[in-house]
Length: 256
Image (tube, rainbow, N blue to C red; front, side):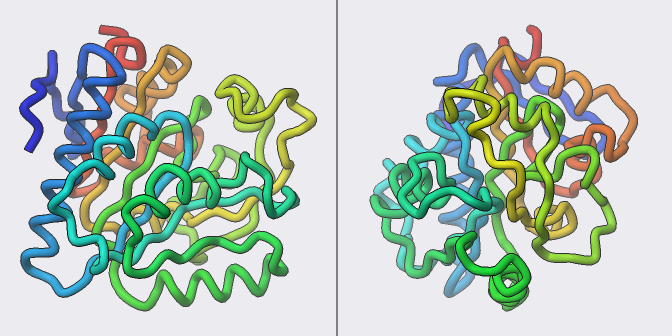
């Protein structure tokens, strides 16, 4: 487990909240705690299944996780939670590329299932949905968007009772602007308008959720997540209903 202590902890409904002094400490602590959980699961199961998020908010977490020498990644099946539609195959903004560069190509999980957005949307939703449905998800590593989205479940398309495993969504303006704010795209018009995303019930089906949300641009989303009504107007509020989710924030995002 992490020896980096939070400066504050609280519980909001079922959600465990840990506040760290800065994003480096947040990433180190969250990465160490996720690594400990992964090793604990692998001690009791032949294989485990993990869903990863791709965003700058995950950088310090992924850096810590990939540095742990004692995880047997050969027994891990890795997924990711969303992907843009319409980007060139070699685009640096693709989430599959982000995760290959930052963890998959480094630790080499036994199996890596990437969302193929060049496939027809209907065919890819069936293919990827079938892969997700093969067995329960053990761990989900996620973030929260400026508009409260989890994966690409923006407020207009979020559904806490979504019947789909994965679906095509139109990205709302706040979500697209965040991609510019994060430095992922030069202008708003460069950001794709549609994406494939795992749905909220799929994410919530994971046994253990680790949610990393650093930085001042996320302060309003964190405030709404913790204090607002549980509603698709701020999709991340649903995390307060999960039996084992920890939200890792820093002073900037928490407002401490």
